[in-house]
Length: 382
Image (cartoon, rainbow, N blue to C red; front, side, top):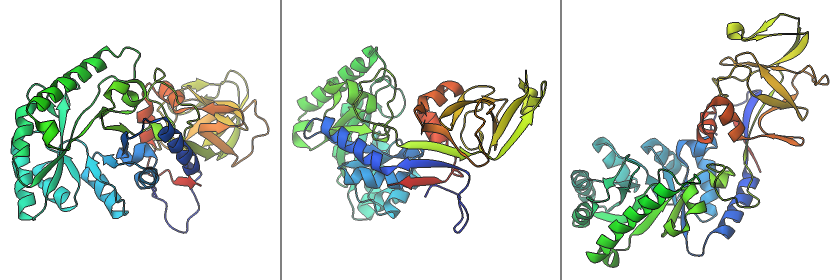
């Protein structure tokens, strides 16, 4: 469990709920939406965007994911230690000191230059193993990978190394989830330009290479870029990367964030609330204190946003602290100590989405999901 909670201690009064039953329904819906024979890679980096990497990987592998993908060696080792049997792909670049461990544990890594490929090949040879590698093509994100114009010769050199098995070639979109997909289609054109060069060199016909380009936005909106496999991280979690993407009927978020009322107190006209005295009461009010703050992952805001108490919106007042935040419950008089409060998710007929929190915090949904601290226990609902 993604938590600092000690055994035999009560559950903290602020927690994250993950609905595994809804995750399974989401996966069924997505599989029904996917074209036949299209493979998919379950991206579970950064604890599956805060949901718990092991738990999400188990469910997605059961649902048919061909790969699981992470961003660090430690993440890959956690999955392998949890007996995740699917191939594990580690995004990004690995330092020379990590190659030995990656190859020993049969992780699939990216090698994007000849020097690193030779290092990996030598380590694999000494271990009498074959190292599974992929190549990332930089078609415009300008992050990892080989520029598409320079990739053919590097790929050919990798194929000459006896202890490397080139498993795939991929690229990554810089802007697939916006209405204007001009640059995404330019990236696709560049990737296909490379593939045509590889066909002319008989590489694609001589080797079984997995081709993939799409993240969630690409899967939803750029079917021409599906190739052999798509990579999906947030879609099974019931979250879309933007408001512009195609919707799939029935998908729902699986993460909720909740807490409880830890204190209730009246304040008088003119009283201030919170650090910096950012809120001053214009009339007598009743406020409540919640034992959750920006140290737990709630955006650092001042007099912005709201929570749900008894199905009603209670405004956040003042500046939230690391471990506490205050809300105005004057209009919800039935509120009592330790009542449940929804920070993100549904209560009654109302809902606070991850996109709402992102707007309040001036950030993106990915940031909000991955921000919930390890000290917030994850409770998995079946």
